[in-house]
Image (cartoon, rainbow, N blue to C red; front, side):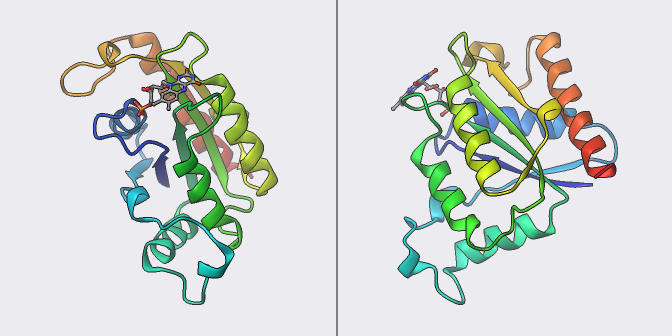
Length: 178
Ligand SMILES: Cc1cc2nc3c(=O)[nH]c(=O)nc-3n(C[C@H](O)[C@H](O)[C@H](O)COP(=O)(O)O)c2cc1C
């Protein structure tokens, strides 16, 4: 089962991106998580730029989404919402319909006690408008600071690691039972 992981952060030491790499490490057997690295290459969305063929980074993104059995999207919270770079990515995807019906786990990560719950809500709302199949059992809002990951990026807290594994198993179950 191929899962495409999309981080909503451009930061080199992003907690969201580190967590997606940790998810790839913790994934149950049979589940292959690949992190997409092209967020910084996407142009700003404008309908006039949505040409046929589309700009190469957009074509690559849409192709990778189409090939994936499911999506795992992890968003930071910026000013109580998902960051503009992630919304921009979703704007590029919507016209292609690549997300329609796609099983999707929506995650948010923030050092705050709410774990980015407002960004999570904005992500889920947008995904639902796009007709993605958001899987509630696979969704997470995680309170995490850099200290919650060791030098290698592994989660220090076994309870959080279990939550990740549980969410990934729920995503796999949703793919198997449409
Ligand atoms: C412009 C900006 C706005 C932010 N707004 C919020 C916010 O509304 N709520 C929150 O919990 N954290 C907020 N944060 C803190 C981020 O959640 C935190 O920096 C997080 O680590 C970013 O994710 P990343 O590590 O994956 O880049 C904000 C950070 C920045 C830079």
